[in-house]
Structures are given as structure tokens and as C-alpha cells.
Amino acid sequence: MSIDGLIAQYKEILEDSPLNYAAQWKANHPGSKVIGCYPIFTPVELIHAAGMLPVGIIGGGNRLEIAHADSRFQSFICSIVKSTLELGLTGKLHFLDGIVFHSICDPARNLASVFKRNFPQMMVEYIHFPQNMTSRFTEDYLTAEYERLKGAYERLAGKTLTDDDLQRSIRLYNEQRRLLRELYRVRRETPQNLSTAESYVLTRVGTLIPVEEHIEVLKEALAGLRDRDEKPKDRVKVILEGSFCEQPPLELIEGLEAAGCYILDDDFLIGWRWFVEDIPVEGDPIRNLARAYIDQSVYSGVKHDSREPKAKHLIDKVRETGASAVVILAAKFCEPALFDYALYRRALEKLEKEGIPHLSLEFEEKMWIFDKARTEVETFVESMLFD
Ligand code: SF4
Image 1 (cartoon, rainbow, N blue to C red):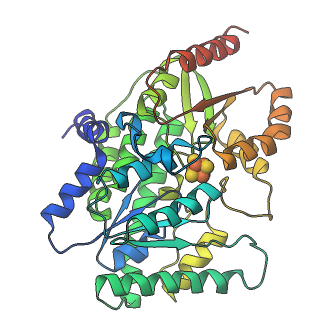
Image 2 (cartoon, rainbow, N blue to C red; image 1 turned 135 degrees about the horizontal axis):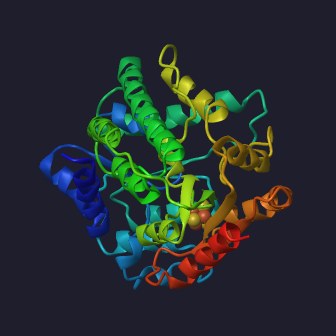
């Protein structure tokens, strides 16, 4: 299949109803179990090694009407929390055998409790990530937390996980993440050959299908990209930050690009691309997963790590990619993203003095009208191109 055909096929699935696709997978594989993974970061290897399918539960998109979830949450809360509950309350998560949440923020913590109470047939797990990366107990603590999760999935799957099972899963996800890093490299170096909306589709589909299939999709896409040789357009090269949990509508990503940006890097779906290098396979696999979270994972608004300021990572990213501007694109009412923006202010001012400006935008899952955001980006781009 051509690269255009491949992307169009998966784009249609995402625009239609991604969760129906996962539900259909379960219907086609009777006896298999499916575990929903709320953003941001799930050690999917534990689920895969137990013979179950990890599926990203990443909100309800802009076609879901919120009719029931509003009564369970206050108004000033991000969309993804409400839309995820709405999906549950309207029976759209019926195919899940379990769901896992993480200690990323208070709304996610509350959502886990609401799920536990409202959906007793579903195994609801909650991972407490370490808040202190420098303690000598951090690694042991997270290893124990993953061991606890492993035990829960062993009971659900009715099988004991061996080191071999886990090492095989780590190997597969290493390969998937390596291919995703390669996809991002291609986009960063030749953004005229791969748009961000396209790389988003190719990444997001991996949250719905088995990793073995996703690896083949990525290989086919990368092979197809070798034949693309587009001429670069006169656009501003930017990096995008702030969309690490709730995801902007695909139309908004397309709109940012159409307004004149090449997005060289972003933090979309960061939990599915969490590691900067392969996780070691040899040795205790659970401890390797824990160590990788501590030492080999990307920075993010929801990872508490005092060893290096997040703003330094932002500046490094600008330098490494050669971007000439920064776009902060944060979900409305997302506290971690808003706190990050406050932390980034000094770094952004420093960049501004070097002629690297930034633009801050907000989005909601339920956006339909993109004109305002597009006009803001067009004005920003024009001010740079014609300065
Ligand atoms: S969008 Fe932000 S506030 Fe909402 S669940 Fe995600 S991290 Fe928490």
C-alpha cells in the first residue's frame, strides 16, 4: 500500500471511532482481555506479557456529547476527564476488562476512584509513581509498585508471568519505540515529507492495535517515506509543548501546519514514546522497567524530577532541533501544563531575547471551530516571516 493510502486508512479509523476499532478487535479475539490505559504512562509490557491488549483511552474526541459526566465533576476541569467518564457511563468502554490510571494529577486520581465505584466489573488499577527521584529507595519502591501491578494482571489473565514473557514484551516495545523515534527523526529533518498530522495518525494507531501489528505499520510507513521528496515550503520551524495528556483534535494540528508551521517536535502521546533509548532486556525485567522510568524517560509536566529543571529540556529541544519558535499548546484547565508554562516563562524570555519567540494557545477536546487558533498562528508566523 502507498504511504498516502496507509495514513488515510488509519486516519479514517481515528476520525470515525477509535474505540470501536479496539472493541471489534476484542470481538474478533474471543477469550482475549483488553486493558485501557489512561494517559500518560503505562508500563504496557506488563499487560502485553500477560497476553492482554493495552489500549489507549485518550478521551472521547470532539464528537462525543457530554450528557452524564458533568454531574460527577466540577466545571473547571479538563475535557479528557469528563469525556472518559462519559465513555464509561454510556457503555462505550464495555469491552475493557480493566483500566489503569496514574498519579499524574488530582483529576486523574479522582477519575480512578469514580471508575472504581461506578464500574465494579472492571479491574481498576492505579500506579503511584515516585515523587522523589533522588532517594536511594526510589528504584525499590517503583519495582515493588510494578510487582504489585504484575500480580494483579497475573490474576486477571490467569497465568504466571515469567521473566521470558516480560523480556519478550520489552524487546517488542523497544522495537516499536525505536521506530517511532525514527519517524520523529524523519519529520524533524524533512518536515516537508511527513506532516505532524500524519505522524500523529501513525503514532496514535499504535494505541489501538497489538504492538506486533504496529511495528509492521511503522516499518511500512518508513519504507514509503523514503520515496517522498517534497520541496520545503517557506514555513516557520517550531517545537510544540503542552499536549502530553489530553490530545488536541487532529483538525487543530492540521490547522497549525496549514497556518505556516513545520512542527519539528511535540509531546503528543508522550506516554507511548516514553523512553529515549531501549530498555535493557537482560536481568530482572521488572527492575529494568522501573529503572528506565527513573533514568531513561523523557521529561514531562507530570514526571516529578528535581535532578534537572524542565525548562532546561525545553531549551535543549529548541537547540537540538534548530526551531525558530515555540508553541505552547495546552489543554484548557490542565493544571500540570499550566504550572509548566509558569516554570517555562524565564526560559521562554531567554529564548525571546535570542529572537526565538513563543505563542501560547489553549484547546479543548470538543473544539469544532479552529479559525481563532489558526488566525493567531497565521499572525504569529507572518510576524516572523516578514519581520
Ligand atoms: S489533561 Fe492535565 S489535568 Fe487533565 S487529566 Fe491530563 S494531566 Fe490531568
